[in-house]
Length: 316
Image (cartoon, rainbow, N blue to C red; front, side, top):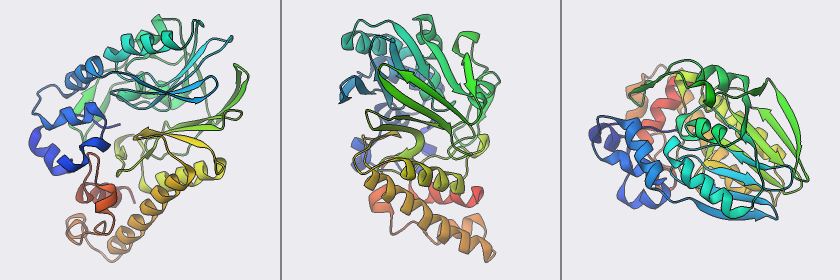
């Protein structure tokens, strides 16, 4: 999840004009100064169309202003992964209606962040039962502060809270497919899960993967660089050579692309860890530019190399 900030701090985070095509539309809105970053994100949710891409006979990728979603249709009812912003709910419902007349059934949250769960209440009102890891419910049920991003969120309303939760794993049979839901150890947050559609050979990994860009790691709710590396390693072990992998942000990806992301994280981790172990301060490590060899490829989202280096340093 990434959130709003004023123009000066946003530009320091390094979203360049050349990278604009890589970033979600709602992220681009952060370049303008805003007193209400959450309101600005929700405004992007209201205005951004939902793009639908078929992945399998009855499984689709949905992309809008928030995190990447997936939708499965069939006689057991529609299954949706993540719910974007509350303001995107009408567009999500329109996109789902265009896929089939099946009734609403199941909404699964990959983690607690607002760009993946803000639409929960609206989708629950439309008939969806919300599933998530137990920590996602705990995070949503209490006020949260995104310190790095400069805003706080109140506890979510009762209708937005997951009704069915699990600790380590859950298995579902839905619309002719077998689905594994499993918790990652703390990675992007302490709430992250993956959803693996076995028959369709599709794996949704949420925000443990930002495809094509440096990731935001939410150190305030348990995220660490080491956890991200281990989570990606786990996802790589699950995926086959032809598995379609849905990242939390960025385009649909492949196992080879996720491997590249994992290898970049591991290399930056090792560089920063060596400098930190030698006694360098965060400012000194940032000044040494440990991401220099990677910036041309990965500094294409809201994070430049310096901002990412800081997160890595603080979460080692």
